[in-house]
Length: 430
Image (cartoon, rainbow, N blue to C red; front, side, top):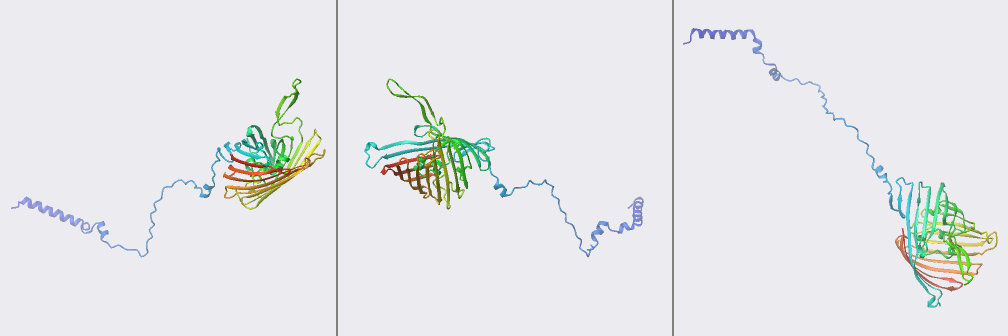
């Protein structure tokens, strides 16, 4: 049985709960806010609401360096080498103000000459020789406007200086040259030894002697073949080859002459004033007017020139004037060149005179083989001697004209008497 105390406690509890219900009726009946929100219907607005997308901002980076375009990269040229080979071995300073080029030429040759068709065996000459052995230094120093050349010949057992001069450019197209060098007279004489089509130059050069001399001149770099070429200068009337001079002393006992006070020099005691000048026209920069083999080929090109050489002999009171008209034609590896030379007495007194001419032609086949023919004639009127040359050659080019081998055959006819000549020569030029 439940006690009176327990019943009393239960009644109190019920009375307390009833009082709470009466005091907070809304809290007991109203659902929670979150539950009401979930239960309430959602109203959708009639007008769509634009919602801006959220864009994430990339971090700010510094601007990249501009990239050069491909054309600019292609146009950038590397610095020229300081050492190498370019028409000779060269050394140059980084700024290009000074440059030295070293060149060389070696021509071993075999020569067989029979003086006449009826000559005795003892009259026949045959020999090997190093016909030319040259070392050349060319270049410019401190500036490209000051250039120089020094060439020494060691061929045939003799050593002497062939070229020793300096050039000073004073204006565009005007250069002063001083020293030992070729007189500007005839085209074939001005061509380098290794750029000839034949082993040697024709009879007119040997007879009328353009040659080298010591002097002073103005020119426009005619060796490079400008459209209008010109050169004029005054010279000593000597040559590059030294001469032996001295006093002849007669031995009273034996009557034999002895040479005393010997001097070996190409400087004359009294110079023979010599004027040399040349003017010409070249149709194209690709002509290369002082090279006799058309290695590069190309369309029709030509050049022509007039040369004057006048020498005065003060001691003999004579002078000799020489005139030369020459020309060269090239077309698709074919080359023809020739000249007419005339010598006449000068203003002081009558001297020896004569006339000469030559014509030669050749063609380069397959960039390798070059056959050629030449005819030259000289009439030395004062001496009454007529000499003719008829020659043919065949040259095999291994590396252009730098390395080659060739043979020549022909005859020189002097006053109607022919000889027989055969030569073979190799060449290396660097």
